[in-house]
Amino acid sequence: MRRILLSLAAGILLGLALPSFAEDKPADAASATAAPDAASGTAAAAPPAPTEPFMIEISKINSGDTAWMLSSTALVLLMTIPGLALFYGGMVRKKNVLATVMQSFAITCLVTILWMVAGYSLAFMPGSAYLGNLSRFLLNGMSFVAGQKVSVSHIATNVPESVYMMFQMTFAIITPALICGAFAERMKFSAMLWFMGIWSIVVYSPIAHWVWEPSGWLAVKGQLDFAGGTVVHINAGIAGLAAAIVMGKRVGYGKEAMPPHNLTLTVIGASLLWVGWFGFNAGSAVAADGRAALAMAVTQIATAAAALAWMFTEWLAKGKPSVLGIASGAVAGLVAITPASGFVAPVPAVIIGIAAGIGCFYAATSVKKMFGYDDSLDAFGVHCVGGIIGALLTGAFVSKEISGMEGSVLTQCWGVGATLIYGFIVSFIILKVIDMTIGLRVTEEQEREGLDVALHGEHVE
Amino acid sequence: MKLVTAVIKPFKLDEVRAALSEVGVQGITVTEVKGFGRQKGHTELYRGAEYVVDFLPKVKLEVAIQDELLDRVLDAIQKSANTGKIGDGKIFVFDLKQIIRIRTGETGAEAL
Image 1 (tube, chains in turn orange, yellow):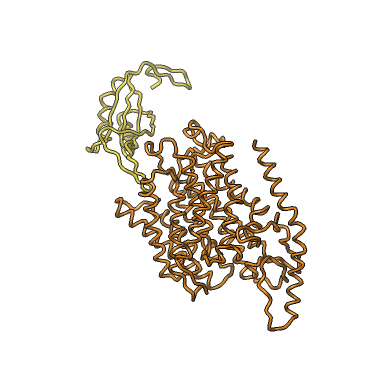
Image 2 (cartoon, each protein chain N blue to C red):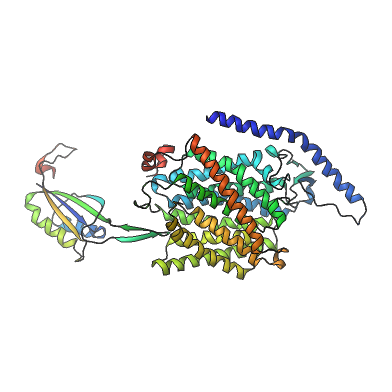
């Protein structure tokens, strides 16, 4: 069954891609000749803005911006491995820690290849308002000719296309890894690989296209999402909720004790997430400039405000300020400032942080208990809810002076709503299909024994 | 011969060990255990999920002794492990049928 599905998937991808091989070279040649023609024409007519990647002289690349983007890419990768791996790893029971870090690590490897094969093209190439074309299938056409030319994305003409592609890859990697928090301690590894692979192509790339590719329908509508509050966090969070609902609660949930086995790991993970997030937010400026610098500042401010807000709320409500609480509050702040980071000033950043710290605290505690779903590590409570708070407040606090753009809470609702609806429905369908074919959950015996031994044949002492 | 087992508060181990040394006990086996009697546990909170932790960490020690030493050993343990607060622990005395030293094969009193 798996071999049939694999061959089918490969066949579909190849079938879609083959025509685009023929299209690609003429398109590059056309845009290469169009630019000199326009330049040599009348001075009054400015060349139309490029709508797809093109080749430029290597001297035109901005080395400062490129250096920052290379660094940011590394920072964002560090957020997943080992940041998220440790953040989640410390929160599960010891018998499942290896399986949990394996999820982040394996997704990194899987999505890297899928992004290279088709994900990047489907997200960041023009095509329709809903999906990019496959002209960059297998990164075909993205090139560097030593000493002469390099291709650049139409979205970021100051840096080589390969670093833009890589930067975006790290976002495509962390988004599915976040979902794992919702179904921790009970999902089959094979089912997880299938789900994440399909989800990356069918949910992540389209939504990234809608918001970040200039011809995407949400971009055209004026959706403001600087670094991925919608594309990454609301998206991952709602998929997490779908997974928690489809897969059901852990065996013994509500009756047996399931405390985190090592919060030291969680704090290390949260710290790596925080520092790495400078790459995530400030790197989304795709430039080493004042905007990136301001994005870094508001990121730090909102995160600290959110951590304190969660900590004080918990202290008042429950009696003690916990380590897990302050770490979670920081992550909630990071999530909420993500869409706003290139658009808001420091004081609104404090407000966004406080709103996320308090809002996510209640989402992860009272709301979860009220509805009874087992979102084990609060992928929905922190990432979806934090993302929604951030996305809406971005509309409220966007500064035209800082960003050159305008927006409103109402406009933001389009992106939030579309992501919630599309994300939930498609994730739900993918999960159900996998459940009906190979099954999503491990057996009860495997769950009791622990996934480390049951799925990977390993354990930690 | 007797096997004396005592469950005590972990931080008292050094004191008890010193007291046993003074009465002439030369060997001791120590295990980390969990347990409760009348001492209450505590509550832990992880993101809104509350856990009542009944089991408290304790230390169990075992010493094999000659019958003649019993009273002095019981006294030594009870005095050195005592804090006066609930949770100090208990001492259990068992009759010991046989002891063998693995290295030499000695048995009985020679093996102590």
